[in-house]
Length: 239
Image (cartoon, rainbow, N blue to C red):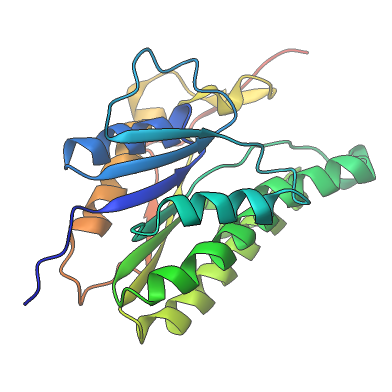
């Protein structure tokens, strides 16, 4: 069996939170990282095996060209971790049309653009992975979460369809759906998970699930992994 070169994986939303934890975890496994994020100033030191790419994934008009530049610079990329996104919650009528478009662009369409850019190239390698970081909101729609859930349901459909589409080329597609993770995601929201360690996941928990998927035997696919805190507690902030 031919020996493959060290893996190189693209991670979006890599500058902080879950994405940063995924990068750090994979780097410990000797995986090279191309990280996409808006601002990497939170990283005190960027390892030599990680290349940060500052990019606004919501700017869809520019995205095909910018992603194409990354693909040409890193032809050996054999994996994707689609993680970037943000949350905004409220009744549907509370959202402007611009806000709806912004959420769909960032939480759904940019992921499709990235898959469209890189998957054909990865298929030619006859091996590789695409891991989508979804959400518990991809499983059940909830009050005040219509737009966010619609995006996450869309990502789940994307992953399920590409799972079948890519398997003939040796490319595995997996979906990881975390429940509430203690990150900056909740900084601008009026609710957050409880403070008790049993009330929330850690970014490192999601990162460990990503590492598990990548370590699996090439013939094994984790189609979908759901992660949740042991005790779900939501605390609301006064406004």
